[in-house]
Amino acid sequence: MTATFADRPVLAAREDGRYVVVQARAEDAPALEAVQRACFPDLSEEEIATARHFLSHQAHFPEGQLAVLDTQTGRLVASSSDFRMRVDFAHYAHSYLEETGDNLFTTHDPGGDWLYGADIGVHPDVRGQSIATLLYGARHSLIRRLNLKGHVAGAMPKGYCQVADQMPIEQYVLSVIRGERRDPVLSVQLGRGYGVWGIIPDYLEDESCGNYGVFIVWRNADYREEG
Image 1 (cartoon, rainbow, N blue to C red):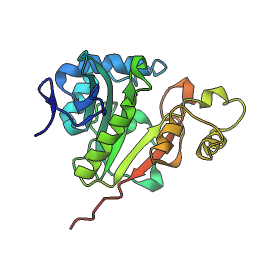
Image 2 (cartoon, rainbow, N blue to C red; image 1 turned 90 degrees about the horizontal axis):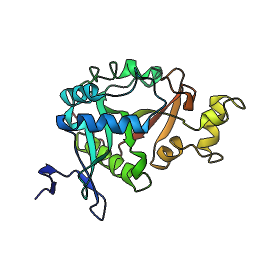
Image 3 (tube, rainbow, N blue to C red; image 1 turned 180 degrees about the vertical axis):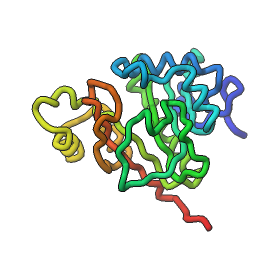
């Protein structure tokens, strides 16, 4: 029997049951926007995901829209947003708004063999409680269930702003890969098995990462060629 919380199927849960991952619904849209704004105060207003955007995500690819609920309070405290796409690794550079169809996921390809990680955010009030780990686990489970090749995303190197006047982005990312420096976002993703494919200039407007994105890749070891 599938576990449920508040009549919603539970896709993943922390060991103690405090936090559960569910598929996002239309009624979650305002809370999803609130989490987004709390997580990304430096993003431009054009790039922030609002309730309107989250509703569009759900319309195009409901399976890829995840939310984390606090079972003690019922509060929505985190989310992730993904869609399917085909990846041309020889031409990976893109802007966030271009790749996501102005953050509406109109670029979702039902036949795409990769999952694109458009967004993940954990409200600052509840960080450090393994909530992001739950979301990544649920994303990877979805990839395996759909038999996709893996997960790609434009990671935000949010620590780069602290040293941008001292080194180019390439040197910064290499130092993070080597473990010589820790980035609050990229280091965590590398620790989850993602690899760096390349650097994307003008990925988005965010001073904390110098507007750069880092194209990262997680490959599904269970992927099976079909047909």
